[in-house]
Length: 360
Ligand SMILES: Cc1cc2nc3c(=O)[nH]c(=O)nc-3n(C[C@H](O)[C@H](O)[C@H](O)COP(=O)(O)OP(=O)(O)OC[C@H]3O[C@@H](n4cnc5c(N)ncnc54)[C@H](O)[C@@H]3O)c2cc1C
Image (tube, rainbow, N blue to C red; front, side, top):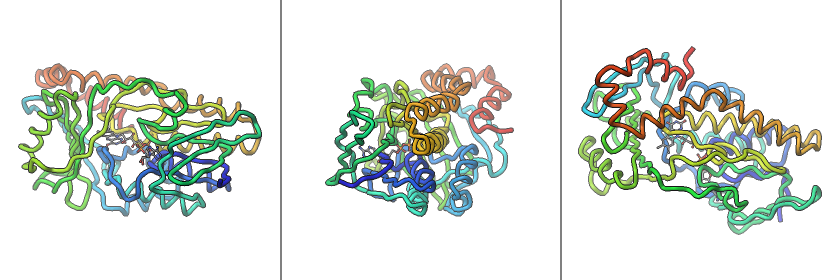
């Protein structure tokens, strides 16, 4: 059994970011990742400008910008029926990068700072420590690890949360589909958020002449959304789509005894807001700060409290954006009606957009 200070389940943005900060401070850190990178994910691929500061502190800001990407200059909200309202974004603030490239870069950064990674290593079993002297025992693939601290960074269907009995019953209220396709001619440097009778679609160029296309709808309407996409983007019936569910679930307590939940594992936000990667990065950084203080002071309770407070603070005052976005996408016909009759005028959409991309 390998002894480590910190074991992190999941190597997405949350896990890789947390690993890099922990390893950089000298902690023996292992990331246990189910997939083999590079891999795509169901995501709109858009990086909110707030990510920049965390990426700067991680030392990868320029390397992210050097990846193939698209710089996005406006958001087009399109109602059912086609009426569109455009909101400008500050130049260069929001970019879209394929997750295969972005996530692999972050994992590379984690390794550069001293973290060890295991890919193709699914966390499948856990034994919680029963005393201060004991460690977490984690089975991942064919290996076993004993860790002082465990971090759940394994996404919205977190295995760690499930094994610890923390995961609530999840309703399949909606499903997300995502794919990449050749960029349609003249698409432009814009994010499209399009209300459809059956749900909504997000579209954004991601560099290298490709378009990210996401569809979100109820299980009963997702087939119709797919037909809409096949027709609108001339895709073959056997086109490959990635899929994910749920799009919504209750938030979990972000910390326990030498346990930290970060990113989607702790709280899932509405994809429409395009903020999930920022929360993943920042919560990974905040958890690392708490873990570093835990090793310095030996006070696990204080570390858990400080992370829980910082985590609440991270979302405080912002959940209305999430609720508003969710209300809008759950009632596409009502939202479209408001857009059509001008009851959602540009200033309101501009305010919402500025809250989401945190424009000055
Ligand atoms: C349709 C849709 C569109 C979205 N668009 C955007 C957008 O444009 N911008 C944005 O910021 N956010 C967007 N999001 C949200 C964003 O994708 C997530 O918030 C973000 O990926 C969370 O990062 P994470 O590191 O917490 O989890 P994830 O990215 O889900 O990473 C979790 C990792 O854990 C691994 N894992 C899972 N189980 C195990 C296990 N048992 N053992 C080991 N490893 C495991 C997985 O393989 C994965 O690599 C979107 C979400 C959806 C559904």
